[in-house]
Length: 221
Image (spheres, rainbow, N blue to C red):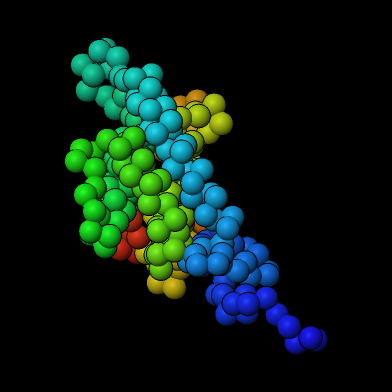
C-alpha cells in the first residue's frame, strides 16, 4: 500500500504553456489533455472574450480616425501608430482563429466556418474545445490566444498606456517577446524592444508587423 499512486498520474507530462514558465514546480496536464486544467479553463475564457475585444478594437478605430485637416496637411497624423496596432491586432485575431479552425476541420474531417466571422470562428472552436485541449499543439493555442487577448486589451485602453506584443526576438540565442510601447498622451511609438532589452530599429519594426516569430527581422545592433 505504501507504493500506491493515482493511476496514470505519474505518467502525465507537465503542461508546456508559457503560462507556467515562471513556476518552480511543474503543472501536470489534465487526464486525457495536452494542457493542464487551468490552461483548459483559460482557453475557454479567451474564446468567450475574443469577440468582445474584437468589437472593442473596431470601436477604438472609430475613436482614433484621423481628422480631415490632419490628412490634407501631409503630416503624420497623431495616433496613427496606435491605429496601425489596432488594425494589426484585429487581423491577427481573425488569422489565428481561422488557422486553428482549419486544423480542426482538416484533422477531424468536419466542415469549418464558411465566412471569416469572429463569432462563427470562436463558436466553432468552442464546440471542439475538448478535442483542441487534447491536441499536441494545445499549449501553443493557449499561448496564442492569450497573446491576442492581452494585445487587444492593451490597444483599446490608451489611458493605461499601450504595450503591443509583436512576436519573438530574432537575435541569436534570444526568444523573448518583442513589444512596441506607446506614449499615453501622444500615442506615438517611442520604444520597440524585447524583454531582454534588445532594441529593434524602426525600419526593422516595419518588417516585423504582421509576422509571428520575427524570423524575417534584421538582428538588432
